[in-house]
Length: 315
Image 1 (cartoon, rainbow, N blue to C red):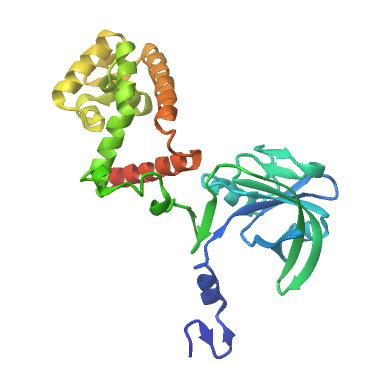
Image 2: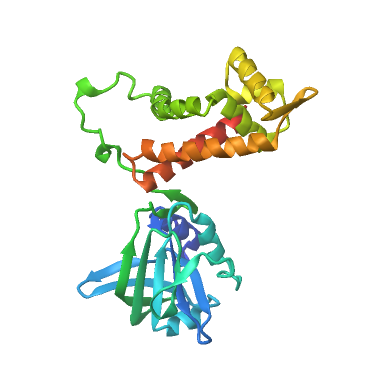
């Protein structure tokens, strides 16, 4: 007897797990109800059918609350979600009726909603429907579409994920061995080199602003988690004790922070100063990451955040 098959028939749970091995994109399908109100639901059954004529399909569960609306809709649209829109996917997968109340969408053809900041929009009119067991298969003729430079959200094995770029196609992958740094295969040296590359220009800006990176770290931590005692603050800044001591004295002398007993706290002047420095940092970050597209920058930020959160949780 094969795995997942019982004598009485198919094991539906095992079949669902097996089908989950096939990674799919995630879309929010939208249309207008008979009363003109927007209707939407999450679906990963989207598929391309034909380019000539341009046809796509999806399937809707017959038990879905909005089944009758989608089955009768003459116009509908797909918003292919971007990798940072898992929350939207969950919202539109829920049975609630206030899915559009928070905004974040605009009207497309015939008023059909299109989700903001998606990876792609595909607007259709109903072409045909087919019986599909406990689902109805709906084929749409593509009338309009738009692709954005955002990496798409992926769903597999019951979890969300993102598409990682193929290292073999990334810029620099084809460099000669003589051009490669001896530590390019190791993550820590790469992170260190990337940090130096990005911080070098910013350090000049800090110098022009009569500030240092150490002072900015202290202000950022006090803004996010203050007030803090000196020792925990020192640990979280990852500065040497001497660098920390000098920076601490400067921010206190400049009235950017106060020392109330053993704890430091940021002042309003310190928050204003930090906001100015962060604006400068954001502008320089955009310049330093020009070799990456916006989706790669988002993916890099997400991966580094995950690495940091995992480290924080394990210490």
